Image (cartoon, rainbow, N blue to C red; front, side, top):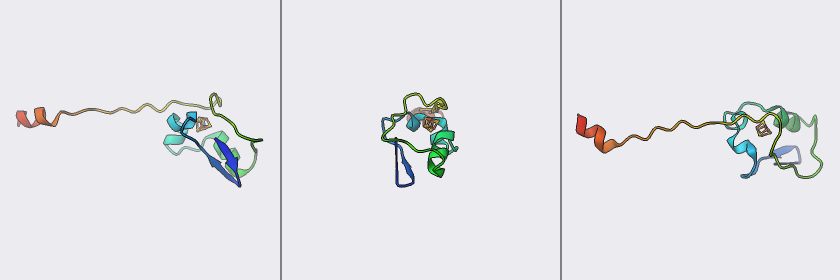
Length: 72
Ligand code: SF4
């Protein structure tokens, strides 16, 4: 993650990618403050333990279409 010219950039290896605050579009306190320019980053920051992280768990259900058609 880094901040440049008024924008916050999140990179693939950032914790933000799997964070509920990021994936659900909820304003995270840190990203919000950075976006508003209330706080600034001095250089590059790696998000490994921001203190606000909440894991986003995906709940996927795999359906076997072949088996469900046989029942009909
Ligand atoms: S809470 Fe932390 S990990 Fe989540 S979006 Fe904000 S900075 Fe990223």
